[in-house]
Image (cartoon, rainbow, N blue to C red; front, side):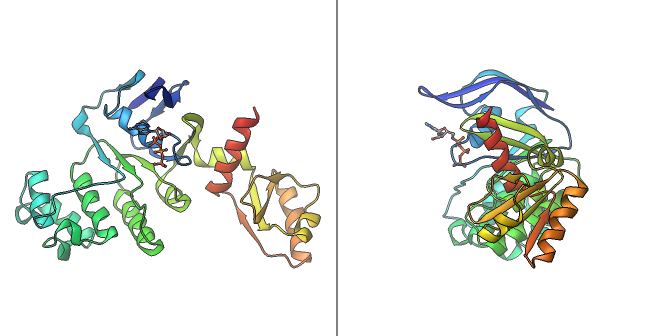
Length: 287
Ligand SMILES: Nc1ncnc2c1ncn2[C@@H]1O[C@H](COP(=O)(O)OP(=O)(O)OP(=O)(O)O)[C@@H](O)[C@H]1O
C-alpha cells in the first residue's frame, strides 16, 4: 500500500527524519508510531501527505483522496454550529445521510451538533474530527495523537470506540501516540522512531520478544528485590521499577518461585510496550 525508503526530511539545516531501509505499510495493517517528542513522527505523516518537501522515495498507488488524516491540532470556524461545518466539509446533509447519522450516533455526538466548535469539550472536539475523518472511508487513515490532552477516562473511552469501530473493518491505520495503552489496543505493528531515525519496525509481539524476552517480571526497585533477582537479566525500565527478562519458562518459574516465597508483589507481562520501547532504544544506541 505504501513503501518508504531512503527518505530524508530537513527543516533548514536540521534533519528531522531519515529512513534508510525501506518500510512498507500493507493493506489492513494497524501500525503504531512511537517515539519521544521531536522523534519525527508527525514529520513522517506530513511527508507521506506531501505537506513537507523531502528527498527519497514514498511509493503508493493511493491517490491523495484515498488517505485521510487526523492531525494533532485542529481549528474550525467558530461562528457557526458544528452541524453546518460538518455538512459543508463533507458535502452532504446529516438528515439525508444514513452513514453519517450512524457515525454521529456511534460517537454519541447528536447533542453536540448545535454547539459551536469552541463550546465543545476536548473529547467532543476530537470526536468531531474523527467523524470527519472516518466518513471519508479512506484506504489509509492516519491518527496523530488523537487522544492527546484528554483526561484518562475520556482517553480510554475514545480509544475503545476507535478500536470497536475498526474491529471488523479492513482499513489500514497509522496511529501516532505517546500512550502505550492506546497502542496496545489499536496497533498490531510498531514503528519506533528516535531523533529522526528508525529504531525498529515490526509486529508488536516480535519486538517484545526481541527486546524483552518471553516474559518480563516487573516489581518495585527496592534493595530487597534487587538482591532477590541477582543473576537474572535486568532490563532498562522506569527508575522506580525493576524489570527482569525471562527468556525461558524455566527461568520464569524460578523467578516467580523466589518472589512468591519472599512475598513480593510483581506484574508479569508479555506485551509491555513501554518496556519494549525503552529497551529497543537502549540497544539501538549501544550498537
Ligand atoms: N515546521 C518546522 N520547522 C522547523 N523545525 C521543525 C518543524 N516541524 C518540526 N520540526 C522539528 O523536526 C523535529 C521532528 O518534529 P516532529 O513534529 O515530526 O516530531 P514528533 O515526533 O511528531 O514530536 P511530538 O511527539 O512532540 O509531536 C523536531 O526537532 C522539531 O522541532
